[in-house]
Length: 389
Image (cartoon, rainbow, N blue to C red; front, top):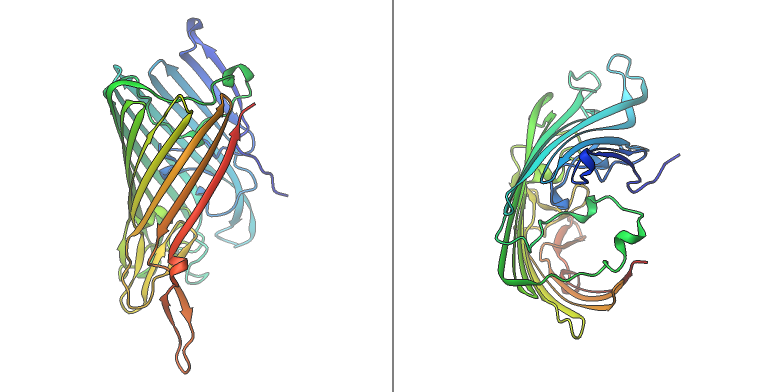
C-alpha cells in the first residue's frame, strides 16, 4: 500500500512575552516531509523525498525552530522505510533510514540577510556492485551537504525572494481574504541581489576500480537580481549545476557509480531574464522573458554525447555533433479578473538542436541523426485561470 500526501502538518508554538515574532515552534509532518528541505531556490533544494535511493512509502519528519524577529535557527529529522539487505546474509528486509537537517539565518539591519544549513542522510545501499563478493557490495551510501545564501536589497519595498513550493499551507480564511493578488510598486529604483551555493557529497563505487568507493562531490549555485521602478520590474537569474548534482538522487549517473574519468562532462548553466509592467487601470500585466542554457552533457567523441535533462531523463545528441546551447522565450499577459481570480496566457518557444532520432541503415548498425525541425523548434501555449476562495 502506498500513502500519498503533499505536506500535511501539525504545528505547535509558544510566543515569548506574547510576541508572535519571538517564538519556539515544533512542526510535525506525519506522512511526507518533502516540503522540509535545505537550499533556497526550489530548483536547487535537496533533502526531499527523492533523496533516498529507493521510493519510500512514507517519509515523515519533524522540525524544531526558534525565531526571534529577523533571526532563526532550526534542527530537524526525517525518516523513511525502504529496502535493505543484510551485509552478512544478504537477506532482504525493510529498514529505517534517517536524515538530519540544521539551519540558521539572520537579517542584519533592513538590507542584508545571511543564511546557512547542513544536512546528512542515509541514502541507501550500493546494490549495483560488480558482484556479490565485492567488498563494496551493500555498503551504505552516506550523503551530506551544506548550503549558504546571502542577499542585499537597497529598499525594504522589495521582499526577499522565497520559494513558494516550500511554504506551509494555511487553512485560515481571514489570512487569504482579498490578498490573492498583489502588484508591487516602489518609489524610484529598488535593487535586490540574492545568491546561494550548495555543496553535496556521497560515497559511490569507483568506476575505474569497482571494488573501491570514492567520494563524489556535487556543486550548484544561483544568483538572482531584481530591478524595480514604479510598477515595472526586471529580473535576471543565473543558475549553475554540475552533472553530479543533477543525478545526486539516483544516486550517480549510473546508479551507485561515480562519473568515469574518460567522459567529457559539461555542467548545466542557464540564464533567464524577464520584464513585466502592471497597468492598474486595465488590470493587465504584460511580460516578456528570454532564456539561454548550456545543457549538462557527458560522453566521448567515439561514443557520442548525451544531454542529461534531469536526474532520470536524458537523450542522445546527433552523431558527429557536439552539444549546442538551448534558446527559449516566453511572452505572457495576466488579467486580474477580481481580487481572488486571475487569468493568464503565455506563448512559449524553445530551440533545441541537440534532439536526435535513431535511423536504421541497411547493413549498418544505424545512427542518431538530427531530429526534424518541427521537433527541435517547440512552440507552446499556456492558458490558465486561478482562483482562491
